[in-house]
Length: 116
Image 1 (cartoon, rainbow, N blue to C red):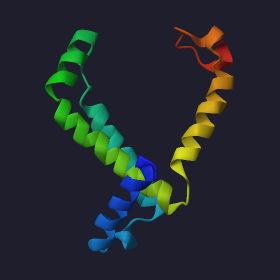
Image 2: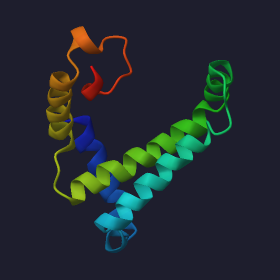
Image 3: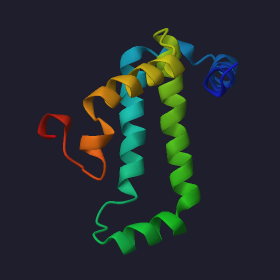
C-alpha cells in the first residue's frame, strides 16, 4: 500500500469518527485546499530577499509544516472523494511534464514550456 493510500485511510477514519463527511463535498474541499495553500503563502508575504525568505522558512519551519500538512490532508481527501488515485495521477502528470519540459531545453530555465 502506498503512503498516500495509508495516510488517506487515516484521514478518512479521523473524518468519519467526527461525522464530518457530510460537510466534505467537492466544492468545500477544493475551497479549503486553496485557503490552506494561501496560509502557506502568507508566511512569505512581504518578504523580499532570498535571505529573508530562507531565514523565515527556517525560523517558522514547524508552523509552515502544519500548514503544508493541512494542504495535503485536504488534497488527499478530495482526491479520495473524487475517486482519483493520486499516486497514479502524479505519475501520469510527471510523464506529461517530461514531454513538455525535456531536460535538454528546460534545465536551469524557469520558462514555460511554450517558450522553450
